[in-house]
Length: 429
Image (tube, rainbow, N blue to C red; front, side, top):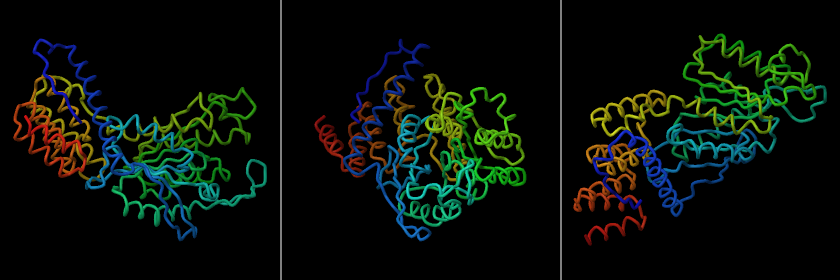
Protein backbone atom coordinates (compact mmCIF):
# COMPACT_ATOMS: atom_id res chain seq x y z
CA UNK A 1 0.00 0.00 0.00
CA UNK A 2 1.27 3.41 -0.96
CA UNK A 3 0.92 5.06 2.39
CA UNK A 4 0.88 8.81 2.70
CA UNK A 5 2.39 9.54 6.10
CA UNK A 6 1.61 12.81 7.77
CA UNK A 7 2.18 14.17 11.25
CA UNK A 8 -0.42 15.82 13.43
CA UNK A 9 0.53 18.87 15.49
CA UNK A 10 0.54 18.66 19.26
CA UNK A 11 -2.46 20.94 19.65
CA UNK A 12 -4.65 18.22 18.10
CA UNK A 13 -3.87 15.86 20.99
CA UNK A 14 -7.22 16.35 22.68
CA UNK A 15 -9.89 14.01 24.00
CA UNK A 16 -11.57 14.16 20.61
CA UNK A 17 -8.48 12.64 19.08
CA UNK A 18 -9.44 9.22 20.43
CA UNK A 19 -12.46 9.25 18.11
CA UNK A 20 -10.32 10.43 15.23
CA UNK A 21 -7.78 7.68 15.93
CA UNK A 22 -10.47 5.02 15.87
CA UNK A 23 -11.93 6.28 12.61
CA UNK A 24 -8.48 6.70 11.11
CA UNK A 25 -7.49 3.19 12.10
CA UNK A 26 -10.58 1.75 10.45
CA UNK A 27 -9.80 3.64 7.23
CA UNK A 28 -6.20 2.45 7.20
CA UNK A 29 -7.36 -1.06 8.07
CA UNK A 30 -9.77 -1.06 5.11
CA UNK A 31 -7.14 0.31 2.74
CA UNK A 32 -4.61 -2.35 3.75
CA UNK A 33 -7.21 -5.08 3.31
CA UNK A 34 -8.30 -3.75 -0.08
CA UNK A 35 -4.71 -3.52 -1.30
CA UNK A 36 -4.02 -7.04 -0.03
CA UNK A 37 -6.97 -8.39 -2.02
CA UNK A 38 -5.88 -6.51 -5.11
CA UNK A 39 -2.34 -7.84 -4.93
CA UNK A 40 -3.37 -11.39 -4.22
CA UNK A 41 -6.08 -11.69 -6.86
CA UNK A 42 -3.50 -11.50 -9.62
CA UNK A 43 -1.39 -14.29 -8.08
CA UNK A 44 -3.86 -17.00 -7.07
CA UNK A 45 -7.51 -17.77 -6.53
CA UNK A 46 -8.95 -16.99 -3.11
CA UNK A 47 -12.01 -19.22 -3.66
CA UNK A 48 -11.96 -22.61 -5.35
CA UNK A 49 -14.18 -25.66 -5.82
CA UNK A 50 -12.57 -28.99 -4.99
CA UNK A 51 -13.65 -32.59 -4.46
CA UNK A 52 -12.48 -35.73 -2.70
CA UNK A 53 -13.21 -39.31 -3.64
CA UNK A 54 -15.16 -41.13 -0.94
CA UNK A 55 -14.65 -44.85 -0.50
CA UNK A 56 -17.62 -44.76 1.84
CA UNK A 57 -19.98 -43.52 -0.89
CA UNK A 58 -18.00 -44.67 -3.96
CA UNK A 59 -18.24 -41.22 -5.50
CA UNK A 60 -16.57 -37.83 -5.56
CA UNK A 61 -17.88 -35.42 -2.94
CA UNK A 62 -17.71 -31.76 -3.86
CA UNK A 63 -16.87 -28.82 -1.57
CA UNK A 64 -15.73 -25.20 -1.91
CA UNK A 65 -12.86 -23.47 -0.16
CA UNK A 66 -12.51 -19.79 0.67
CA UNK A 67 -9.15 -18.52 1.91
CA UNK A 68 -8.84 -15.55 4.29
CA UNK A 69 -7.91 -12.14 2.93
CA UNK A 70 -4.33 -12.40 4.14
CA UNK A 71 -3.74 -15.87 2.71
CA UNK A 72 -0.41 -16.36 0.99
CA UNK A 73 0.39 -19.79 -0.49
CA UNK A 74 4.09 -19.17 0.14
CA UNK A 75 3.56 -18.50 3.84
CA UNK A 76 3.77 -21.02 6.68
CA UNK A 77 0.72 -19.52 8.44
CA UNK A 78 -2.07 -22.00 9.19
CA UNK A 79 -5.72 -21.21 9.90
CA UNK A 80 -8.70 -22.45 11.91
CA UNK A 81 -11.45 -23.92 9.73
CA UNK A 82 -15.22 -23.47 9.47
CA UNK A 83 -17.13 -26.38 7.89
CA UNK A 84 -20.57 -25.50 6.53
CA UNK A 85 -23.04 -28.27 5.72
CA UNK A 86 -25.37 -27.60 2.75
CA UNK A 87 -22.42 -25.43 1.80
CA UNK A 88 -23.47 -24.49 -1.71
CA UNK A 89 -26.97 -23.34 -0.75
CA UNK A 90 -25.85 -21.42 2.37
CA UNK A 91 -22.55 -20.14 0.96
CA UNK A 92 -23.55 -16.48 0.60
CA UNK A 93 -24.85 -16.36 4.18
CA UNK A 94 -21.56 -17.52 5.67
CA UNK A 95 -19.37 -15.42 3.41
CA UNK A 96 -21.41 -12.29 4.12
CA UNK A 97 -21.05 -12.76 7.88
CA UNK A 98 -17.38 -13.65 7.75
CA UNK A 99 -16.43 -10.81 5.41
CA UNK A 100 -18.05 -8.30 7.75
CA UNK A 101 -16.81 -9.60 11.09
CA UNK A 102 -13.26 -10.91 10.68
CA UNK A 103 -10.67 -8.86 12.49
CA UNK A 104 -12.12 -7.74 15.80
CA UNK A 105 -14.81 -10.44 16.18
CA UNK A 106 -13.42 -13.37 14.19
CA UNK A 107 -9.93 -14.60 13.35
CA UNK A 108 -8.76 -15.20 9.81
CA UNK A 109 -10.15 -18.63 8.94
CA UNK A 110 -10.51 -20.98 6.00
CA UNK A 111 -14.16 -21.61 5.09
CA UNK A 112 -15.22 -25.00 3.71
CA UNK A 113 -18.68 -25.51 2.18
CA UNK A 114 -19.69 -29.19 1.93
CA UNK A 115 -22.22 -30.21 -0.72
CA UNK A 116 -25.15 -32.34 0.46
CA UNK A 117 -27.05 -32.34 -2.84
CA UNK A 118 -26.54 -36.01 -3.75
CA UNK A 119 -28.63 -37.61 -1.01
CA UNK A 120 -29.17 -34.99 1.66
CA UNK A 121 -31.77 -36.67 3.87
CA UNK A 122 -29.85 -39.95 3.93
CA UNK A 123 -26.54 -38.34 4.86
CA UNK A 124 -27.82 -35.97 7.54
CA UNK A 125 -30.41 -38.01 9.43
CA UNK A 126 -29.33 -40.02 12.45
CA UNK A 127 -31.66 -43.05 12.27
CA UNK A 128 -33.88 -44.91 9.81
CA UNK A 129 -37.59 -44.17 9.82
CA UNK A 130 -40.56 -45.29 7.73
CA UNK A 131 -43.03 -42.56 8.73
CA UNK A 132 -42.57 -38.79 9.14
CA UNK A 133 -45.30 -36.46 10.40
CA UNK A 134 -48.03 -38.95 9.60
CA UNK A 135 -46.84 -39.72 6.09
CA UNK A 136 -44.77 -42.52 4.57
CA UNK A 137 -41.06 -41.73 4.34
CA UNK A 138 -40.05 -43.12 0.97
CA UNK A 139 -36.55 -41.67 0.91
CA UNK A 140 -33.44 -43.38 2.27
CA UNK A 141 -32.65 -42.24 5.82
CA UNK A 142 -30.28 -42.84 8.72
CA UNK A 143 -26.92 -42.42 7.00
CA UNK A 144 -25.39 -39.89 9.40
CA UNK A 145 -22.80 -42.33 10.75
CA UNK A 146 -21.55 -43.12 7.24
CA UNK A 147 -21.38 -39.41 6.44
CA UNK A 148 -19.51 -38.82 9.69
CA UNK A 149 -16.98 -41.50 8.76
CA UNK A 150 -16.51 -39.86 5.37
CA UNK A 151 -15.90 -36.47 7.01
CA UNK A 152 -13.51 -37.88 9.61
CA UNK A 153 -11.56 -40.38 7.50
CA UNK A 154 -11.68 -38.77 4.05
CA UNK A 155 -12.65 -35.09 3.93
CA UNK A 156 -10.79 -33.67 6.93
CA UNK A 157 -7.52 -35.56 6.20
CA UNK A 158 -7.69 -34.44 2.57
CA UNK A 159 -8.23 -30.79 3.54
CA UNK A 160 -5.58 -30.85 6.29
CA UNK A 161 -3.06 -32.35 3.88
CA UNK A 162 -3.78 -29.96 1.00
CA UNK A 163 -4.60 -26.67 2.72
CA UNK A 164 -2.90 -24.71 5.57
CA UNK A 165 -5.32 -25.69 8.33
CA UNK A 166 -5.12 -26.24 12.06
CA UNK A 167 -7.15 -28.68 14.14
CA UNK A 168 -9.36 -25.88 15.51
CA UNK A 169 -12.64 -26.55 13.68
CA UNK A 170 -16.19 -25.18 13.67
CA UNK A 171 -19.22 -27.03 12.23
CA UNK A 172 -22.41 -25.29 11.07
CA UNK A 173 -25.63 -27.02 10.01
CA UNK A 174 -29.25 -26.03 9.32
CA UNK A 175 -32.42 -28.13 9.73
CA UNK A 176 -31.45 -31.79 9.08
CA UNK A 177 -27.85 -30.57 9.01
CA UNK A 178 -28.54 -29.00 12.42
CA UNK A 179 -29.62 -32.43 13.66
CA UNK A 180 -26.39 -33.83 12.22
CA UNK A 181 -24.37 -31.05 13.92
CA UNK A 182 -25.76 -31.87 17.35
CA UNK A 183 -25.14 -35.56 16.72
CA UNK A 184 -21.50 -34.71 15.96
CA UNK A 185 -21.20 -32.94 19.31
CA UNK A 186 -22.95 -35.66 21.26
CA UNK A 187 -21.32 -38.70 19.63
CA UNK A 188 -18.17 -37.47 17.86
CA UNK A 189 -17.02 -34.48 19.89
CA UNK A 190 -13.32 -35.07 19.11
CA UNK A 191 -13.70 -33.72 15.57
CA UNK A 192 -14.80 -30.13 16.22
CA UNK A 193 -14.43 -27.52 18.95
CA UNK A 194 -17.42 -25.38 17.94
CA UNK A 195 -20.94 -26.12 16.72
CA UNK A 196 -23.80 -24.01 15.37
CA UNK A 197 -27.13 -25.86 15.01
CA UNK A 198 -29.60 -23.71 13.08
CA UNK A 199 -33.26 -24.67 13.66
CA UNK A 200 -32.19 -28.32 14.09
CA UNK A 201 -34.65 -31.13 13.34
CA UNK A 202 -34.51 -32.64 16.81
CA UNK A 203 -38.05 -34.00 16.39
CA UNK A 204 -36.56 -36.66 14.09
CA UNK A 205 -37.58 -40.25 14.89
CA UNK A 206 -39.70 -39.37 17.92
CA UNK A 207 -36.88 -37.23 19.40
CA UNK A 208 -34.44 -40.13 19.45
CA UNK A 209 -31.29 -37.97 19.35
CA UNK A 210 -32.81 -35.51 21.83
CA UNK A 211 -33.23 -38.30 24.38
CA UNK A 212 -29.70 -39.58 23.74
CA UNK A 213 -28.29 -36.06 24.01
CA UNK A 214 -29.92 -35.49 27.37
CA UNK A 215 -28.32 -38.63 28.77
CA UNK A 216 -24.84 -37.80 27.48
CA UNK A 217 -24.97 -34.13 28.41
CA UNK A 218 -25.77 -35.13 31.97
CA UNK A 219 -22.98 -37.71 32.24
CA UNK A 220 -20.06 -36.72 29.99
CA UNK A 221 -17.63 -33.82 29.93
CA UNK A 222 -17.84 -31.27 27.13
CA UNK A 223 -15.19 -28.95 28.44
CA UNK A 224 -13.60 -26.97 25.63
CA UNK A 225 -16.65 -27.40 23.38
CA UNK A 226 -19.12 -24.67 22.41
CA UNK A 227 -22.61 -24.94 20.93
CA UNK A 228 -25.04 -22.29 19.69
CA UNK A 229 -28.63 -23.26 18.83
CA UNK A 230 -31.37 -21.20 17.18
CA UNK A 231 -35.13 -21.49 16.84
CA UNK A 232 -37.15 -19.69 14.17
CA UNK A 233 -40.37 -18.78 15.96
CA UNK A 234 -42.33 -16.82 13.35
CA UNK A 235 -44.49 -19.88 12.73
CA UNK A 236 -44.44 -22.16 15.75
CA UNK A 237 -47.61 -23.93 14.62
CA UNK A 238 -48.52 -24.44 10.98
CA UNK A 239 -52.04 -23.07 11.30
CA UNK A 240 -52.79 -22.10 14.92
CA UNK A 241 -51.80 -18.48 15.54
CA UNK A 242 -52.60 -18.78 19.24
CA UNK A 243 -49.53 -20.94 19.83
CA UNK A 244 -46.75 -18.73 21.18
CA UNK A 245 -43.48 -19.19 23.04
CA UNK A 246 -45.43 -18.73 26.25
CA UNK A 247 -47.75 -21.71 25.76
CA UNK A 248 -46.12 -23.95 23.14
CA UNK A 249 -44.82 -26.47 25.68
CA UNK A 250 -48.43 -27.10 26.75
CA UNK A 251 -49.30 -28.26 23.24
CA UNK A 252 -48.84 -31.97 22.49
CA UNK A 253 -49.61 -32.00 18.77
CA UNK A 254 -47.31 -33.10 15.97
CA UNK A 255 -47.48 -29.56 14.59
CA UNK A 256 -45.37 -28.11 17.43
CA UNK A 257 -43.03 -31.06 17.98
CA UNK A 258 -40.26 -29.47 15.90
CA UNK A 259 -40.11 -26.29 18.00
CA UNK A 260 -40.78 -28.07 21.28
CA UNK A 261 -37.84 -30.38 20.65
CA UNK A 262 -35.45 -27.45 20.21
CA UNK A 263 -36.81 -25.71 23.31
CA UNK A 264 -36.58 -28.93 25.34
CA UNK A 265 -32.99 -29.56 24.26
CA UNK A 266 -31.89 -25.98 24.82
CA UNK A 267 -33.52 -25.69 28.24
CA UNK A 268 -31.89 -28.93 29.33
CA UNK A 269 -28.47 -28.02 27.90
CA UNK A 270 -28.60 -24.71 29.76
CA UNK A 271 -29.20 -26.51 33.04
CA UNK A 272 -26.21 -28.87 32.72
CA UNK A 273 -23.48 -26.56 33.99
CA UNK A 274 -21.39 -29.46 35.31
CA UNK A 275 -20.44 -30.79 31.85
CA UNK A 276 -18.41 -27.69 30.89
CA UNK A 277 -20.21 -27.08 27.59
CA UNK A 278 -20.17 -23.43 26.55
CA UNK A 279 -23.79 -23.18 25.43
CA UNK A 280 -26.19 -20.51 24.29
CA UNK A 281 -29.40 -20.42 22.30
CA UNK A 282 -31.73 -17.81 20.91
CA UNK A 283 -35.31 -17.60 19.68
CA UNK A 284 -35.65 -15.59 16.46
CA UNK A 285 -39.21 -14.34 16.68
CA UNK A 286 -39.21 -12.60 13.31
CA UNK A 287 -37.65 -15.42 11.30
CA UNK A 288 -38.94 -18.43 9.43
CA UNK A 289 -37.11 -21.72 8.98
CA UNK A 290 -35.73 -20.51 5.65
CA UNK A 291 -34.58 -17.06 6.82
CA UNK A 292 -32.98 -17.92 10.16
CA UNK A 293 -29.55 -19.15 8.89
CA UNK A 294 -28.19 -15.64 8.26
CA UNK A 295 -28.83 -14.09 11.70
CA UNK A 296 -27.92 -17.36 13.44
CA UNK A 297 -24.52 -17.53 11.76
CA UNK A 298 -23.83 -13.96 12.77
CA UNK A 299 -24.83 -14.38 16.41
CA UNK A 300 -23.45 -17.89 16.63
CA UNK A 301 -19.98 -17.08 15.36
CA UNK A 302 -19.73 -14.01 17.59
CA UNK A 303 -20.77 -16.15 20.57
CA UNK A 304 -18.33 -18.96 19.74
CA UNK A 305 -15.45 -16.50 19.38
CA UNK A 306 -16.42 -14.09 22.14
CA UNK A 307 -13.07 -14.77 23.79
CA UNK A 308 -11.35 -13.67 20.58
CA UNK A 309 -12.72 -10.13 20.70
CA UNK A 310 -9.90 -7.71 21.27
CA UNK A 311 -9.33 -6.58 24.84
CA UNK A 312 -8.84 -2.91 25.84
CA UNK A 313 -9.03 -1.31 22.36
CA UNK A 314 -9.32 2.10 24.02
CA UNK A 315 -5.80 1.77 25.41
CA UNK A 316 -4.43 1.05 21.96
CA UNK A 317 -6.20 4.15 20.66
CA UNK A 318 -5.17 6.38 23.56
CA UNK A 319 -2.04 8.43 22.69
CA UNK A 320 -1.12 8.54 26.39
CA UNK A 321 -0.68 4.76 26.68
CA UNK A 322 2.99 3.88 27.09
CA UNK A 323 4.79 1.45 24.79
CA UNK A 324 5.58 -0.81 27.73
CA UNK A 325 1.90 -1.12 28.59
CA UNK A 326 1.02 -1.91 24.98
CA UNK A 327 3.62 -4.67 24.93
CA UNK A 328 2.10 -6.22 28.07
CA UNK A 329 -1.39 -6.00 26.54
CA UNK A 330 -0.14 -7.81 23.44
CA UNK A 331 1.48 -10.52 25.56
CA UNK A 332 -1.80 -11.04 27.43
CA UNK A 333 -3.77 -11.16 24.18
CA UNK A 334 -1.37 -13.75 22.78
CA UNK A 335 -1.80 -15.85 25.90
CA UNK A 336 -5.60 -15.77 25.55
CA UNK A 337 -5.50 -16.77 21.90
CA UNK A 338 -2.91 -19.50 22.32
CA UNK A 339 -4.81 -21.02 25.25
CA UNK A 340 -8.09 -21.22 23.34
CA UNK A 341 -6.67 -22.38 20.03
CA UNK A 342 -4.33 -24.85 21.68
CA UNK A 343 -1.27 -23.71 19.76
CA UNK A 344 0.81 -20.49 19.48
CA UNK A 345 -1.28 -17.69 17.98
CA UNK A 346 -0.36 -14.04 17.24
CA UNK A 347 -1.99 -11.37 19.43
CA UNK A 348 -3.17 -9.40 16.39
CA UNK A 349 -3.92 -10.11 12.77
CA UNK A 350 -1.42 -8.59 10.37
CA UNK A 351 -3.78 -5.82 9.24
CA UNK A 352 -4.23 -4.56 12.80
CA UNK A 353 -0.49 -4.43 13.47
CA UNK A 354 -0.10 -2.32 10.33
CA UNK A 355 -3.13 -0.19 11.11
CA UNK A 356 -1.92 0.72 14.59
CA UNK A 357 1.56 1.34 13.23
CA UNK A 358 0.33 3.84 10.65
CA UNK A 359 -2.04 5.44 13.15
CA UNK A 360 0.84 6.18 15.51
CA UNK A 361 2.97 7.52 12.68
CA UNK A 362 0.19 9.92 11.79
CA UNK A 363 -0.06 11.30 15.33
CA UNK A 364 3.68 11.69 15.76
CA UNK A 365 4.45 8.70 18.00
CA UNK A 366 7.19 6.88 16.08
CA UNK A 367 8.27 4.71 19.03
CA UNK A 368 4.85 3.10 19.17
CA UNK A 369 4.71 2.84 15.40
CA UNK A 370 8.04 1.03 15.35
CA UNK A 371 6.84 -1.44 17.99
CA UNK A 372 3.75 -2.36 15.96
CA UNK A 373 5.63 -2.61 12.66
CA UNK A 374 8.40 -4.71 14.20
CA UNK A 375 5.89 -6.98 15.94
CA UNK A 376 4.14 -7.45 12.62
CA UNK A 377 7.37 -8.75 11.09
CA UNK A 378 8.11 -10.91 14.13
CA UNK A 379 4.73 -12.62 13.96
CA UNK A 380 4.35 -12.63 10.16
CA UNK A 381 7.95 -13.00 8.86
CA UNK A 382 6.81 -14.12 5.39
CA UNK A 383 4.57 -11.13 4.77
CA UNK A 384 5.78 -8.69 2.11
CA UNK A 385 3.25 -6.17 3.37
CA UNK A 386 4.75 -6.24 6.88
CA UNK A 387 8.23 -5.38 5.55
CA UNK A 388 6.77 -2.69 3.31
CA UNK A 389 5.10 -1.09 6.34
CA UNK A 390 8.44 -1.00 8.14
CA UNK A 391 9.89 0.69 5.05
CA UNK A 392 7.17 3.33 5.39
CA UNK A 393 8.26 3.86 8.98
CA UNK A 394 11.90 4.43 8.01
CA UNK A 395 10.95 6.67 5.10
CA UNK A 396 8.93 8.79 7.53
CA UNK A 397 12.10 9.10 9.63
CA UNK A 398 14.07 10.12 6.51
CA UNK A 399 16.14 6.94 6.83
CA UNK A 400 16.17 5.96 3.16
CA UNK A 401 18.87 3.33 3.62
CA UNK A 402 16.76 1.23 5.95
CA UNK A 403 13.59 1.98 3.97
CA UNK A 404 15.30 0.47 0.91
CA UNK A 405 16.43 -2.54 2.93
CA UNK A 406 12.90 -3.40 3.97
CA UNK A 407 11.33 -2.75 0.59
CA UNK A 408 13.90 -5.07 -1.00
CA UNK A 409 12.92 -7.75 1.50
CA UNK A 410 9.25 -7.22 0.54
CA UNK A 411 10.20 -7.61 -3.12
CA UNK A 412 12.01 -10.88 -2.32
CA UNK A 413 8.83 -12.24 -0.76
CA UNK A 414 6.48 -11.04 -3.48
CA UNK A 415 6.54 -10.62 -7.24
CA UNK A 416 4.29 -7.59 -7.02
CA UNK A 417 5.46 -4.80 -9.33
CA UNK A 418 4.61 -2.23 -6.68
CA UNK A 419 7.61 -3.18 -4.55
CA UNK A 420 9.96 -3.11 -7.51
CA UNK A 421 8.73 0.35 -8.49
CA UNK A 422 9.06 1.55 -4.92
CA UNK A 423 12.69 0.46 -4.78
CA UNK A 424 13.41 2.70 -7.72
CA UNK A 425 11.48 5.60 -6.20
CA UNK A 426 13.51 5.35 -3.00
CA UNK A 427 16.78 5.14 -4.90
CA UNK A 428 15.87 8.39 -6.69
CA UNK A 429 15.46 10.26 -3.39
